[in-house]
Length: 332
Image (cartoon, rainbow, N blue to C red; front, side):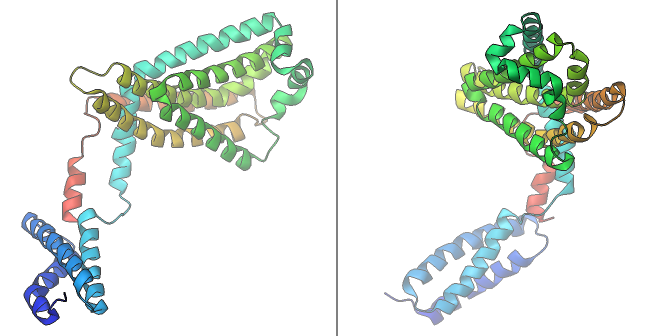
């Protein structure tokens, strides 16, 4: 069955022209938005009819363009919004970090105690290092391996490698948080690495080298790992023990939205820590100066997370911002 094109165009052509006009406008009021939605829905049905029954590809193509333009107008054109970026860094990210502070502070405490215990144990029992990394590797680590690690590659290349490595580690903690055990395993692996390396360096009288090199970047870098692990474990706990007012799926979804905010924000944090590790940690300047730079950046992040996060912490996560809603409807 074919469609009488002249009659069909005469009947609906006015609607298509109006749809095209509304789709091309820069601003729409509430009534025009409703009209655009209604015309778009009718036009998609009419386009389906033409595709199945009309032999005129030119008409089908013309109406397809109108429908696509209207769909783009309704769903919004992807444009960079500096206001949205600002809200993320002032409200979204610090708020998510602050709301999860009991989790990542708990992770930081447990990780630090475990790492210090392993350093103390390996330093007091140097033979155990051989069981982990071998005696030859331990000797090389003390002589030049540990310090040489920070100067082995060109600083920009080294920074990019560190950035991607740490961001991937954080992503694993966040993604595997609902399973809990993988996050604990990743934390154990990192604590064991620090404990063994630190214990070997302390046992051979190179504690100053170890702490002088790891502290400048480690303060910020490990804090990022703690935040990722804490938020990931929070997602897991939302599955294990959801709040009474939420279903298990709702609780996980809410915690997961927080995790997405944290994941994006940590990309920037790890970029900063990578720059410090690549350029500041191996710099030929006094150790106290290097440590001071790393500590200053670390304290700045904590102040940022606490001060801005406390202000944003009471806001419900996942709620749409009023400005974003107005922007969608007005086409700004």
